[in-house]
Image (cartoon, rainbow, N blue to C red):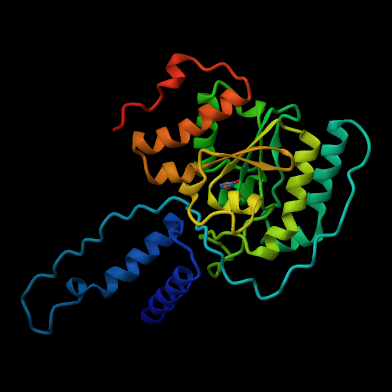
Length: 306
Ligand code: URA
């Protein structure tokens, strides 16, 4: 167990050095970690032979798994490089037919499929083909690769609330990612991956044409990049150093206005009204540009800067 804990610590150090800022840990793994740590805690050591000192109770602090976060820093490329994306042309036909053909192509792409673990899914965009607004995130996480749909985990539930706050239903917008699979990280002995990392340049280069094709088919009037990695994926790695430099500003991608804002996971980590207001102000700009009605109530959301 000692060796396993040391191996775990080494792996965590390696991940930290490669830019990973936090990991999601399953309850099951936590329980096993608690047991291992408790076994090593001095207070848990048996009293010396002959001692009458009662064994001190072991208290292991309650651990709350951090929410999924995204590091904007690039990580070293995977050992086996990906092939260059194979050019493709969208078929003729109406939107629904073109979208279905694109979905079949992406879900059946052998390169994409080779990146997902057994039982997990390649993830394609979801939403209305008549959407005026397309939200673009980073990459599927644990829940998304199981359900095969973007933004269905905690960050996705918050994104849905944000969309509802704009007076829209989730089904009325389009939601996609710059990546079609969950970037791989080391997994446990059962093949379960707990952490997330941003995509590498080859991964992004492979998937970006698929996002562009979705933009072409859906033809939204506006794009919203959620978080630094999505924004850098669309605008280029050198477009900015810190998201704060460009969030709330209009940029352009694929010939249409692009609003850059925070990723919903930022709000999950910073639950203050001040943080919520920042992202909300960006969404107000999106609503105005999309000619959506904005009520006085909506204008005032999160103004109580608690
Ligand atoms: N975060 C993203 O950026 N995309 C998802 O699909 C889920 C979480």
